Image (tube, rainbow, N blue to C red; front, side):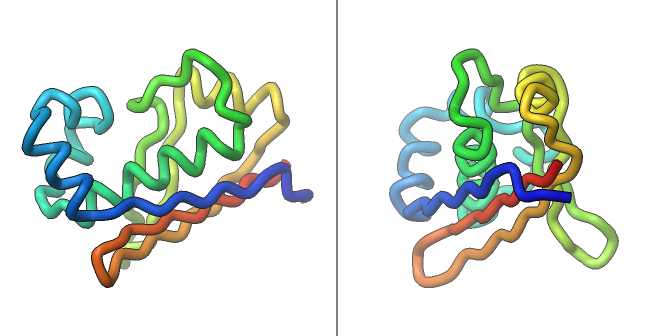
Length: 118
């Protein structure tokens, strides 16, 4: 396996929470129903950072759908990515076979790091 790309994104949790409050429909556009079930703003901010990091790995091609990159938790709480649709198609063009994801939130910021391998 070879690293195809690395993406990192940082989100200010308070600013993100304010955006969600000000524009409630944005959560519907950004997150899957399962992700929206995580009511805590820092968790949503981390998931948004993950989606942004995925887009960076892929070179931010036009037409990516936010719902096509979903953060899911394995038993024990380890985060991983479930991709489909537009994100899966872009990943296939880059021969991406596997994804690695790390999330954190502390001190008012949420950070995601994504590594894609062929």
